[in-house]
Image (cartoon, rainbow, N blue to C red):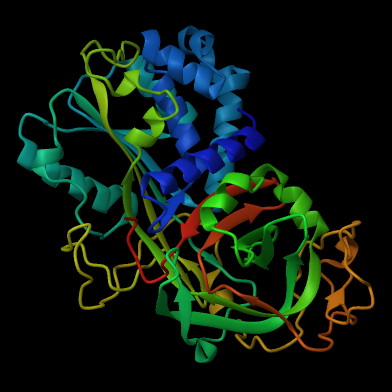
Length: 450
C-alpha cells in the first residue's frame, strides 16, 4: 500500500468501526500504526491466512523473509522508514503476547523491520496471565490506566496483539482557559448535552467549498507542518454520511486551497481513553483465517499451532486548551475499562522520546483574541477562493510562512466555526501528506471508546 492507500484503508476502517457501534459513541484509529503491525503479522503467516493478508497489504514478504541479506533489502528499508515516519507523530508500542516458542528468524525480522516487542506469558494460568498482561501494558506501553484483561479473556494457544498509541502535541497558539465555558452540544440523536467548549477568535485556515457537505478548519500544532483538522458536517448532514463520502486522500487539495480567515472558533474538549478489539472489523475486510484456530498457520513464527485471539489498539489522548496531551485527567489504574471515573487525580506522566519542547510551550502566551502570526505553511490560492472583497479573508503566501505578515490582521466581524454537533477530528502532516490519527466524536463527555 502507498501512503494514500493507507489513508483510504483507514477511512474505510473507521467507517466500519462506527457503523458496528450503530453510529453512537466515539471511535478512533491510528491507521499507519495498524498497517505496520499487520506487516509484522504477515511475515509469520503461511497458507490461506498469509494469502488473505498479503492480498490486503499488497505485499507478501516471501523473498525477504528467506533472504539471508534481508536487512539490506528495499522492503526492509521501506518499512523501517515508515516506522521512522510514525515516530515523528506519536509514541507507539506494538507487542505480541504469546505462550509459544518463537523462532530466531521471526524474532530478528519482526524486531528490526517492524519494531515488534514479544512477551511470553503462561496462558495455562488465565488469572496470572491476565494480571501479567495488564502489568506489562502499564509498564511497557502506556502507563497507568484501567485494567484491560481478565482471566475469562485468556485462551490457550492464542496470540494477543496490542498496538498502544500515545500522542502529545501542543498547539502553536493555545486556547485561553479563562474563555472555556459550558455550551450545548447536540449528539447524533439530536439530544443536547453540556460540554466544556474551548473558544478562540483569531486567524485560522478554513476550507469551505459548496461542493462539500462539510467545512474544514486547520489548527496548527507547535511542530511545523502538523495540524489538527476539524471536519464539521453542514447542517442537515449526518456524521455517518460524511464518513462515507469524505475523500481523505484529497486532504492535500483541501489544505492547499484553504484560506486564512478571521474566525471565532469553538470546539469541545474531549478524551479518547480505552482499548478497542478490532478482530471483527478485520474480519469484515475478509481477513478471517488468521483468527480461526483451525485455519490459522503461523508456521514462519513458531512450530506450534496458534491463532490471533485479540487484536487491540489502545488510544490515549486528551484534547484540551494546551493541545493534545498524553495525560488523562481522572484516570486510575484501579478502574475497570467500562467503569465509573475516579476521584480525578492526575495519572503519573510517562517519559517518552518525543521531540517536544514543553518548557517553551508552557511559556507561550495564551492570549487568543489577537492577530498573531502562526507561522503556518500557507496554502496557495485556487479557483475555490471566495469573493476577494470579503473583509474576513486574507490571501496566503508560502514564502512568508515564518515571517510576521503585516497584512495578517483581522478585518470585520469574525466568521463562525462552532463545533456543536458530531465531527471528525484528524491529525495531519502537510509535508508528508498523511493523516496519522482519526477520530469520530459524537459525545465529547464520553471519555471511553464504547
